[in-house]
Amino acid sequence: MNRADRLLLVILLMGTALVAAWGVAMLPPEKVGGLLKQASTFYNVKSGAKATYRVFEKTGVPVRRLQRMISDANLQNATGLVVLDPVVPLTRGESYILQDWIEEGNTLVIVPPDKEACVSCSGETADWEEWKKFSPVSFRRTAKVRNHGESARYEPEDPLLLGITRLQAGEGKRFVSKSRKDQDDENNKEKSFWSDRAGVIGIRMPVGRGRIIALSEPFVITNYAIGKADNSVFLANLMRELSGSELAGTVLFDEYHQGFVERDASPVAIAKLVLTDRWGWAVGQFALVLFLILYAKGLRFGKPLDVVLQKRRRHGEFAASAGKLLQDAGATEIAHRTIWQYYHKRFCRALRLNSDTDDKSLVEYAQTEYGVDIRDLIPDERPGGGKSRLTARRLLSVVRRMNDILEKLEHGSG
Image (tube, rainbow, N blue to C red; front, top):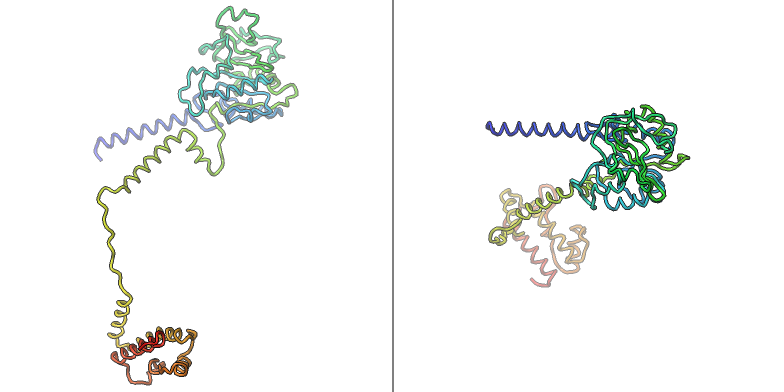
């Protein structure tokens, strides 16, 4: 490895370490929080909203996190939905469903996002413009301002401000009226209920039989601010607004548009994630490249070769080899017994006897029924033999006679 290669390796390692550090800081595990302020009910940090979610649970309000796209099924039986500064755009289909749900008499609490356009949208058509349908029309959000809570103005008749003398707001953003005319218009249904010297913090907008409550920032219900001033009373009023006076309606905290999608625990979860999410394109391209490589490996680039037939050995060659081996060893008696076992079965078959017929019965039957004497063909099984030593020439003569008699029995020839 030369100097240039070592330098390149160091650069790659440093880049990988920086990316990993950025991921840990900006994209932390759930329930921890990171450098980016995000009002998620999973986060324990100051900017998170986990304490608010726990308060809803402890007071007995039916509450749950929404970690799937907005749909009729997911909003069923829900009377309130809380969306805190979402980081995922809203699809057009979700927008229609949410609009109808609010008009039926339900409540949406939203901190609208500031995004102007969708940077990377996938799947169904989605755009940040869809969120603007649930934001104040006659107000716009300012940049970050300093807190001017000492000059706060409250609408005492608003249900969210009952029993409140002072609320603490953060140094976040504010809504400001787009024009003096909008502010003085009596027909304008968008009414502010909480403001300070920097601008408007809370706006109530009636929609059909329901309502939208827009907050310029989520500070008032974050983990840090929930215990400040009368913010806890505001939270109690908000619970009643979302769940009804009996606190019986289900309240949803939108985590799907915070980037926390419900995880599938099924055995095929990884396959579904790989194929249905943005990984799908990468997996598809990898599979295509792999297919092309395999296709190229199997493609013929020359003239096909004829099949070469290998010469096979015949049974006779094996028999000759075995015979030669026995002859060299002088084992003519072993050869005789081996050959007789083969011919014994064929004699039994030709005489229509069972293959396990003993030699004595076989000899008697052949002599009686066919007049064939095969006694001399049978090897002597007694130890040491009883006959003179069997020579190779005599063995060959015996085998030929076995074959002649067998052909006569099977075909009537010989």
